[in-house]
Image (cartoon, rainbow, N blue to C red; front, side, top):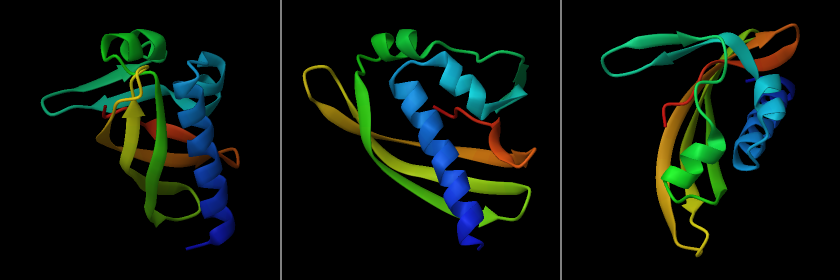
Length: 121
């Protein structure tokens, strides 16, 4: 696996995660290639804008921050990659934390990594 491409990929994914944790939609949108496709258990949906509000989701789930990201790049070529966020700690405002998992598929567009499929939250 090309280490330079892997480093670029991880840098963009961390940028997206930081944008989500800080509720910065401008940063999130810099990392997303629209239309965004969500593949669910029983349906596939396409969105022209980010389909949820990080602040509303965090409030509903009583989640304040995330840390301890365990990310694995499982496959990558010059234009596509698949990575998995195996674990992270989601913290409530009172400091209590739990573990969640998700996966993300990414592609390279104009020499920038941008999300093609995301948010299996």
